[in-house]
Length: 611
Image (cartoon, rainbow, N blue to C red; front, side, top):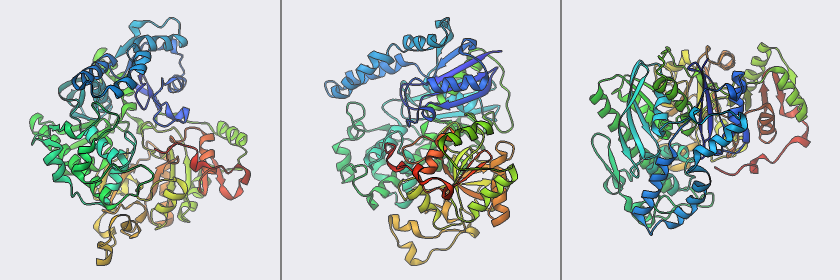
């Protein structure tokens, strides 16, 4: 038996993943255990979990692989400072202490941590993968393809910001790269910062805001900020940015170009201008990605594409790549960000360094991305009792029926079943569910449950066998990483008056038979639900369909704004009592809000720092 532990840490989204003879046993982000969103610290809790899930101790681990090479990253930091000196000293001075304390001597730091777990841990057992190779490995090795073009797009790794690899069997080779400071991820983050959202967590808000605007600044960006070539390669005009030498993403020249200052988070209103800027950067990103994928399809003549890196979480762009048809098949790593690098690093060791053959599975080898902890019924009941919860224990069918009944009555349900998801998406393990037919669901969930911006869209979890009856989509989308349009016959035609509305005023217009999941541009971020990977979730949607004729539910992550997705039954109960959820279903335990003690209600809205 060979055990390989992959870890990512010390930048953002620390995580651990464990392989046993190449099979993915477990993977989880540190934030889920510490309750600190995007926790960058050494993933001690995630490591403890994956070992426990495998039933092994750390002294049985054969190899540990870190997901990038810190010395190359430090080289970039030094070269960037020296090329900009004396400008940039403030950011350099802030970065140095943590580098000198931890990152520059990361190998010693990691050895010290691992020897706390096993005194005999050898330096030879610790390896380092390159950042983009880890991403590429996480995308190709679990994919359902014998061979594929692998495209990684993110902010920056060591030097690479975009990379192309070719995977064949158990081999994966980086073919070409684009380097810092020219980065599609950093460009999107710059506009995220400019529109008043938090870099490295608010990019998905910009994507959600884009359909409320018009891409009025598309040409302005391409004429001044980005030199985008026909093959998708590009250069960023650094005279508009500040991330190389300063503490902000953009500078005054950038603001002058667009004609308005940077929006102040939480205080300045979102205006039509910000919506148009969001639409413009989304449009530019889609054009860049499409030029890249079309060029790569012609160059390599391989029908399969794998995607990873933070930009691969842009499900709108992904949907357009799929529909464009340059590649016949697309597979996207569900943990495309840095957390997924932990998994890729471990898989790179197994296949690339140890040369083990690869078993290609018809779907993929991610097990639905349900790779986190699960809790037995006894554990659940003990935890809920300790919390002071009032619950009833139902048999499986009664639990499914109670959930479906609540949803059919337009209730909001906290759904906690089986193993926790790996990656940023809730996929029916730790989800908040709602009725997609309801015109009030989106507002209720955003404002009274999630405590977040009203414009944020919700995703449908739809039975895989019914997806083409409701959406312009054929095939699977198990990880909520593709956007498709609602079918024409399911839409509600807009009046001339409604078409004339601007911005957030569009939000209240009913656009389809399932308004809670239909975005203002008639799109939806799809999750197809399969019985073989999540039978309980499939059963509850089927029960809802039997009652309503609607084979889908609203699915959003089980947390509030700024909180990591819930991990334990205690986390679920705390969130339940701090929000306007009507019902909580944990295992076979069903909890109704009206039955709970009023003394247990908490001010959950202000518990977590805003993201």
